[in-house]
Each structure stands twice: as C-alpha cells, then as structure tokens.
Image (cartoon, rainbow, N blue to C red; front, side, top):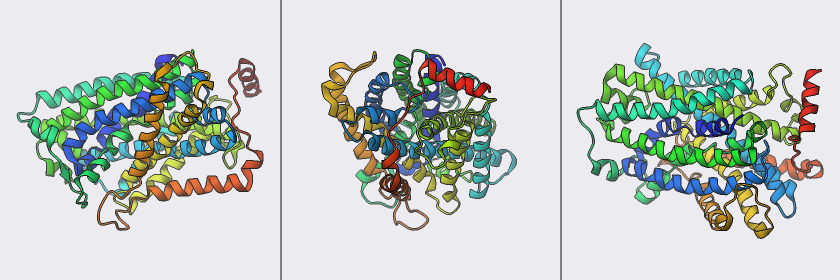
Length: 479
C-alpha cells in the first residue's frame, strides 16, 4: 500500500457519511441542533489530540498488531498483561464498530427499499439486510489487499465528492432553510431525562462514534511503504479531513431541515432520509440517500479489513480461542480469510439485540467507542510513564508529547464513563443501555482466561515484519 492508501483506510472507516448520518436521529433527540453542530468540533479537537498521541507511538512501532504490540513494548513490567488486555479491548471495539457501520448501512438500505419498493423498515428486515451486507463485505475481503486498496482509494473521493454534492444540493434546492439561531442554538431533549447538561453530554456520542477506526492506519502498516511515517500521517490526516468534511455536512443537513418532528417520526426510521426528501423531493432525496449508502458500504468494507488484520495479529500470538485457525492465511488470496469471517460473524451477533431492544444501535456505537478508545489510550498512558526513556520514531511530537498525552488520557476516561450511562428514561428492558454488560462480559472473559491460563504462556506479540520472515510466509503459501 502507498501512504495515500493507508490514509484512505482510516478516512473511509471514520466515514462522515456513515457515522454522522446514522446517528443523526440520535442527535436530534439528544441535544438537537445545538449539540449536533457544536459537539462536532469539540469532540473533533479532543479526538485529534488522542490521534496525535497514537501517531507518535505508531511511528516507533509500525506493526499490524498496532495498539496491543505498543502496550507490550512500552510497559515497564508485565508487558504481556498490558498487551493482553489492550488487545481484547481493541478486539471488542473493532467488532462493535464494524457492527455499527454495517447496521447503519442496513438501516439506510432498508429506508431506500421502503421508499422505492415498499419493503417495510422493520427490525426483522433490517437485520436481514445487515447480514447480507456483512456477507458481501466478507466476500470482498477474500479477494486480496489490492482490490481493497483500490476500493478504498475510490472511497476517499466518493466521500469528499459525496459530501460536496449533498451539501450543495441542500443549500441550493430548498426554498426555505432554518435560521442560524435554530441551527446553532436550538436544544431538544426527547430522552425523558430532566437535566439538559446530562442530555447534552450524551449527545456527544454522535461525533465520538464517528471519530473511530483511525487505528486502521496502524494495523495496515505491515502492508504500507514507509510505514514509520505513512502510518502516523494516515492517523492524523484522516481525523483532520473528517473534522472539516463532517462539520460542513452536519451544517448543511441541519440548515435544510423542513419538518423536525416529521423527520424524527418518519416511517423509514431514518431521519436524514426524510430530511433529504422534504428538502429535495422524492427523486432528489433518494439520490442523496444512495450517495450515503455507497459511502457506508465502502466504510463497512474497510472496517472488516482493519478488523481482520487485528484478529490475524492477535491470534498469530495465540491470544484468541482456536488461534491456529483464525490466523491462517488463504493460499489463493494471501489474506487472513478466517479472520475476515470472524470479524463479520462477531459483528452480526452484536447487532442481533436490535430485534427486541429499540436502543440497541446506540448501545453498539457506545461499545465501539469505549472498546476502541480504551485500547487507543493505554499505550499513550504507558508512553507517558516512560518519559524521556521513550525512543521516538521519525514522526514525533517533541516537547508537546506530554501535554497532548495527558489531555488524551483524561478525555478517554471521561467518555468511557459517559457512554456507559443510561441514554433514555425510564430505563426498561426495551431502553436499557447494554454497553456495560458487553464490556464486562469481554473484560471478564479476558481476565478469567488470563488468570487461569494465559499468564503462564502468553509472552506478548510477535512481529512478522522483517524481509526474512515475510519471505518465509510467502514460501509456505507457495507450497
């Protein structure tokens, strides 16, 4: 992969046309326009600090294992334990973000099918489409890294041009737009909670979920030229470009709202789809919906790619049950095909609660944020503890390393607690935020396995990135 292709993977997974749009309805209920518009740059700047801290470490250790390899190398002692738990949190977040992306795509596809063919937007239909989308992405990822890299390059331009087309259409076509007072100041609370401050904080999930997945640039470094510089640049630039493009997109959509309550109560269950149709008419709205769906499908494909590489690296080191099976390389495609299907299958299981829990999608996105960001920040915490002993790579923050790292750690601690809290009142079986349950199950499993068995044999990650090691793998595949 080139440096641009590496950036393209992370930019595609962040995907402002996926995260911003699929959680837009959540934002409309949880803080409304004020939190949608102002929450984005706030979260974006904090995310940039997290990404900068990650990028510095990535420059020193450009390997497919990424975060959990960094934790092993940076820990002053018990490196294997730090690596183990970082890897499990990363695995949880990767699977959840794949579920969130492809479930969001399924919701938008179902909305389009409902509008065009009357295929009702029911939970059963959405789960069916969700399974098909995951299967397609699994199949695409069996054809090799070159095809995926090509599609990711196309995806970058699809996203940038798509945002431009959607925003331009929403600015030019409608006869009426919302006022600046509404867009920048209207606060809406449909959660049942009385505290506006609490609800406003919950509304930050829209932005924070969108800004996930940029660790993909680290996981793809073993397949990237000039990885010690290209990997860090991919992380940082994917956040910066998404920060700008996403804010423009959110402003364009919010100004174009014609009927706020009508969009929220749309039969399709996808408020942006109704906003598009109200602003542009049926045909124009459907065309914008197709642009968004295309971007979401690109995003899900890239997420499965990054997820499978993490699973491959983690199982290569024996950290998953049946590791020998999951890290097997397909001789024909030269990709970790089994890891690809574990990524897709795990994501499908996470999405199934939507059949009986109406807030399940918000929970999946919360799980993605918490799992990924804990894994993102643990190496940064260890790097801070190293101080001057840290050996910086060619991409370094210099004297800014410590203050940036401290703010990143504090922010991640804050959002980890925030997104485990109840999102809707009253709390019932249908509205329960099952994020803490999922996190505790994974943490409990990983912790128990570590104490009972893994601490005796897991020594940390291996690296198969030298020319000799890669040549040996190639010889094995050619047999």
